[in-house]
Image 1 (cartoon, rainbow, N blue to C red):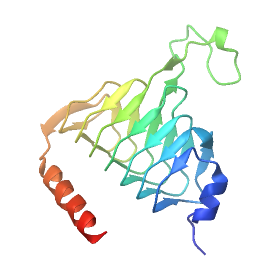
Image 2 (cartoon, rainbow, N blue to C red; image 1 turned 135 degrees about the vertical axis):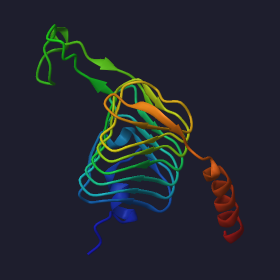
Image 3 (cartoon, helix red, strand yellow; image 1 turned 45 degrees about the vertical axis):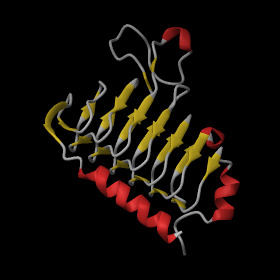
Image 4 (cartoon, rainbow, N blue to C red; image 1 turned 90 degrees about the vertical axis):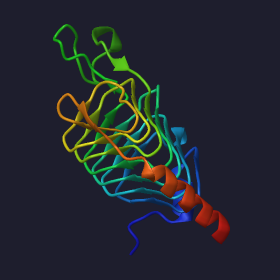
Length: 190
């Protein structure tokens, strides 16, 4: 038995769009499928949650137990992005200061919800259990260590660790050469 949806089952999900070679676990929870676009060569593993306006590029992997709560501002995941297991991406979040009430059962006039678009640029990677807050850009080539808390946009080609996450060292950019070689190889094969 295949644990991923086949092409006919993908059609029945009602996604806004999806490309070729899309593997979505049948154990993935999808809310608002009509607002979710998925490119080519994407894999979404068991027990993930996708909710809200989400655009996923090509060659993207979202590992088990990760959750993407996009809200109305959206989450954009560009090509060659990896989201490791148990990551949580919050496109909106309640105010926990005690000045406002929280949770979805409370009318909006009693809450102060922060909402903002999240963008993952090419070749960014989140380590296990990373949390990303609203209104953040994960810059090209950014890598986060396990248990990182990202509340501000990152700088390109840096490695981040910690709570809150801080930049630690520059990453190599050989990935860009490998990307070019890889794309050329599949162009020649096809």
